[in-house]
Length: 381
Image 1: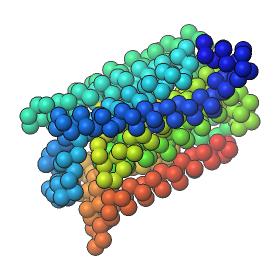
Image 2 (image 1 turned 90 degrees about the vertical axis):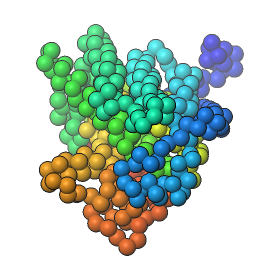
Image 3 (image 1 turned 180 degrees about the vertical axis):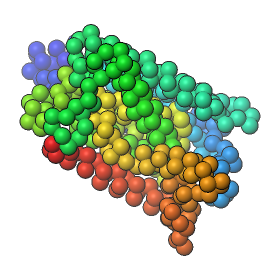
């Protein structure tokens, strides 16, 4: 109604522009996070919702965290991050867009899984939260429902480009999953790997003050550009990219994601007043993957979110190498940000460990460089 009234009586049509709504969504989410953050942190402190750093696998890391006072820092700050994100999307996005609705569903569902995991850690004595299998089951249930809804929509509306993967560098090369039941199953499995993998990558990266939120702002902003370009027929025709109708609306969601992370980073910057927890890292990682699926940049996502996948890969390789070699370690510590913090190196210890702020800022620099490289792929066809 406000849009119509402004247009009719004041000749103001700003609300029709995706770029304007994306900027306003970012500002709204940022302000919401700032306003909700302070009372949320006070409530978490009052109820002693704190991370138990003594459960850290490394004794040295546990001691360092205690010496820095991290054992007194409240966690589950991702709850007000996600709430700010969802409020902003509800205010500024077109809710008749299925991509947006499914993105909201995926974000809320993964936030619920993360909240249960955090809540169990903090309320059940000697509990590490949900087991790996239970957490993966929750992520899988939400992801499969969302992806199956997208597959149904693609077939019902004859938009088979949604079920096609477009490798970078090549103008005319594509891999279609719209051929039948087996192809559909293949796409569901592929999308599951993308969403669950990115969600867990963001979760593993959330180990230092400002690390995950800062990298998410950079990656989210970059994917917002991809979504906008993919939803514009004239731009996709010029750049040789797939045209996805209504994908541009996900730019507004990307703006809300960046704004919410900026507001959270206000309180999470070193020294952090609050930690994100699984209730924030799981959903924002999943939403980033969803934006990549809609923008058809699934294969560019590892470059676009390089820091997240480097952290995930280091943890997976460390565990595999440890099991195969009978106790030897490939990296000084995994995920690699703790190896740099405690040992000063990734593959071998150095005489000068990196300060936490140094690790985080350099990770932001790497994330920005990789984001620029991914944007350059728009023209490399």
